[in-house]
Amino acid sequence: MLDRALTEYPASKFDYDFTSTYSIIEAYYAAGAPERGDVLLEDYANTLQQYSEYYLGFTGGKAERVSDVLYAKLRDLAALEQLAAHYERTEQLASISAYLDLFTKAAE
Image (cartoon, rainbow, N blue to C red; front, side):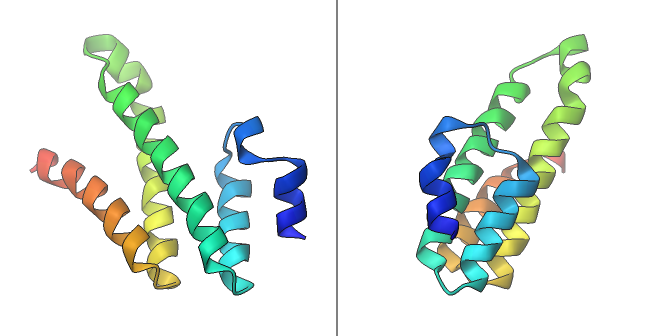
């Protein structure tokens, strides 16, 4: 059923939405299809990283106006990190953790 949904509505045809995308990834993992979940998780994580880097490019007042959006993208990445950890997807976990660590180190 998940495969059919993604065939009918492929990720490339719509913007990612955290609630539905996270649910689909988790459903793949729970259904025993981790490779399919990994593909979607990696693509979504890359999209969130691209958004984060875009918003980081703003300065001054513009940066303040987009800060909530930036934090939301980082929060979504952190949720994907927790999902990867829960399902023991070590490669995906390492990739997301390394990206998020950049923000932790920058904040120190």
